[in-house]
Length: 90
Image (cartoon, rainbow, N blue to C red; front, side, top):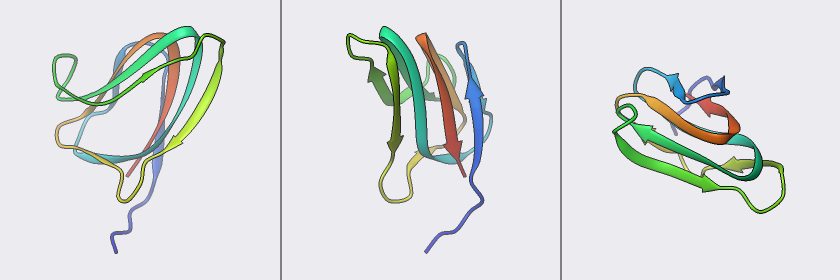
């Protein structure tokens, strides 16, 4: 069993959440109606590892990823539109 310390980073505009290899364990997304979040591995033009489109009403969602989470080999880059995100990684 793999055990690591879990850390978090809040991202409020398009930016890198963590700049190294890691696994994203969970996210909390806060959004306006129709907001979107895309997490990419390898910067803004990297490989999409997770995407979320908000429902018609504003709110927030906490999403746990199964197993060891989603592996990011280079970095965790968040592209945000009408949303913010807290990324839990380790």
